[in-house]
Length: 220
Image (cartoon, rainbow, N blue to C red; front, top):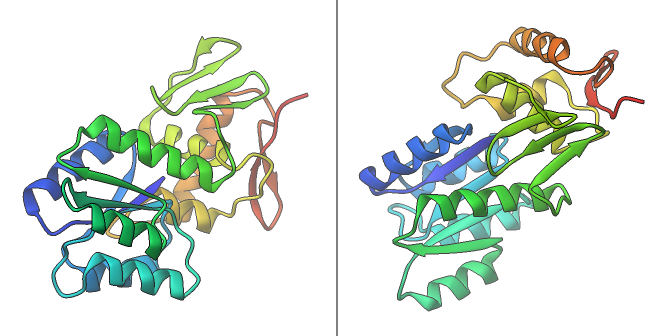
């Protein structure tokens, strides 16, 4: 999963980046509203963490421009604890959730997970495909109740597919959502990780749809 972080405070931005990456997210970042708006408008993200008090272009303006352009990416806004009017303005501008500063990293991660689930119409933090289960809270993957050991890249790939059960996902889409902008992207890498996952999961769990991409399907 790929997250856009738009925050002008360098210390907080570094802390958030580290926490998100530790949780398995690919992170792109911007320290002002203009650059954040450009990234959100031109790149593919599964969620956005958007501070409202940004230089150059404020967060409300960024959000309104995204929504005005028809972009539906899930947005979590960060506000000062006593700025209730910012929360109202953010929600009215199209934010999906808000979090007041200061906050605990665990709460932010829980809200991001919920935003990503809701964007795909999923209610439970436990994603299942037949006997295969992925707990988005703990990052544990089990098969028939037994732990499946995955690398971080394998986990991110499986997580993306399990958030879209039955949907054909192209290699390009996977590449765009699993790696940050400054990563040396190579769609052939996706094939490598799909091959590794297939050796750890039941046959036909990850189907190849010729010319289109991959689809997660519950084994018979």
